[in-house]
Image 1 (cartoon, rainbow, N blue to C red):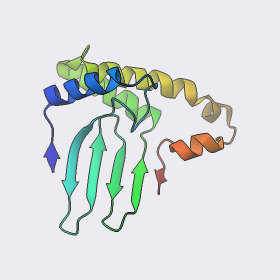
Image 2: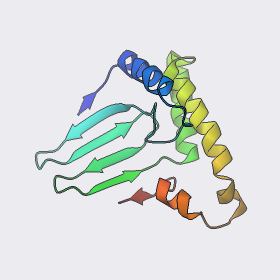
Image 3: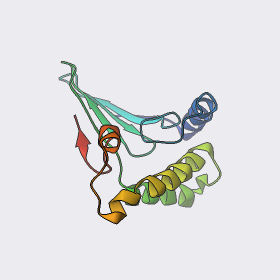
Image 4: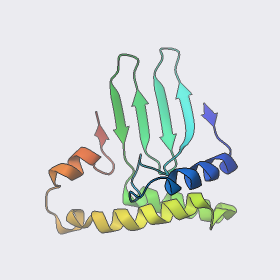
Length: 128
């Protein structure tokens, strides 16, 4: 498994966020890769800053899992406690938590998710 130094991740977050007006989302701009594993059979597994996990198989199949709101809050708090408060990475996570909390109102209301929400990936579920 390869992990990337926090300084490199912070700089990548800053550059990617500056180049895109889109709001924060798992797998979007600013959600940089923090670790990567390549298996002997050629499967690539990536973990992004938000906690999103992506698995790419050699034949072209790919799967992803977006984090839940609770996982995002925990990840943000862990980075704050590690002394990273105020860094571009923590600011990105804080914005992502706020966006997730706002967009997940349908979860609290008990209504079914919309087709666009399903296409973007439901929190905590694997998409293929």
